[in-house]
Length: 420
Ligand code: HAM
Image 1: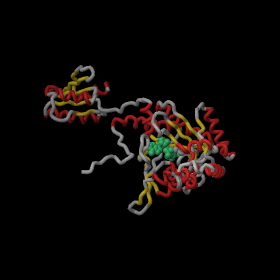
Image 2: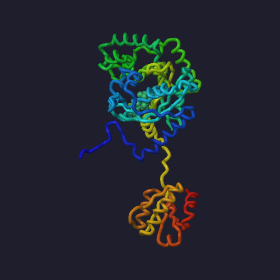
Image 3: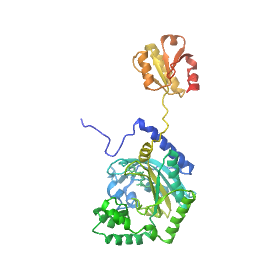
Image 4: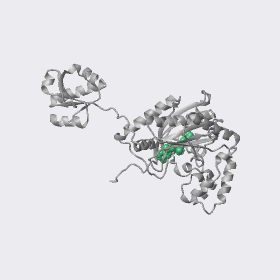
């Protein structure tokens, strides 16, 4: 028989890790709602063309990482490698431009990228993703960054680093790209093969190269923020003023260009310590040209995506604890077949009364059933012996104090409710 394992780059979230997931997702919903974002759910797959146009040919995502296939009807489909393009598609399709602006939505769900797996980098990961449409005010850029900051502060993170940059706009970026390419041409013999390719396919990405030999070249490269048009420069300036007013610490990172083509003006990332090379817990930015690119009217937009797996890795690295999930606190122990019958009925009644309860299955001694109660860490064990059944009573054992008490069967629900 073949031995099946989870596909490379995917992971099972086992019950012991679910408290982290439940807590982070619950806080993400809460913070999104606090800032006026409404939840949207979009399909996990879209037409391949949406990502090719939206995210951009020449990006790693489109060139190397998409799970694309033809469905049985011959349609080209791609499992979503990110949320933004799908949400923009939905915004256009449902005429959301008629809603009061900015239109603020958020989504949570799985994302698929055929990447080289390593710690914090998976082929299926989960994003908390927010988007705001129809407003180009830099105060909104600051607000989007505030959602991320607030969420991580709420979760108890320390030592986060906010990195920001501007990628300009179609007016000023081409001139900068030309300048960058000229600079790189002077260093043609010193750069890696990947950067040579990037220079033709996706020049801004040379700034992102991790190759050791390219680092001195990157360090000497011109900075885009020094070549922005007046509008982009003023936008970037105002964003910084807002962040300063809020007392937020940030770093202008001249190398931050992000891996998706749709960005214009603001881009940002949030880095966490202690989770290795894949330190970005959040990445986002403005994409004022994306809606037009995928068939809508001109609609400025800004948002971010934050990987929940990385958030949880960082929480664990920082020893942040989360509340445990509720579980049954009552176990019913029975002694003999007649008692088991009463037990099965009582089990059903207690659950109907919303009291989480389990039954000790099988024919077992009372001692063994009490051990089971200990293993399951319930607060109370209910013992149904022959005498108890005859008298319409149950014996309740408090598992912590070992005290026992006899209670009439018909008042058991209330007795438990006042104590649990
Ligand atoms: P992204 O930077 O590609 O941006 O992904 C956002 C976040 O998702 C990353 O910062 C990281 O936390 C997480 N992430 C990405 N890839 C992986 C992976 N392979 N394994 C684990 N976690 C990962 C976007 O996807 C943009 N759509 C964000 C955005 C929204 N920009 C504007 N609006």
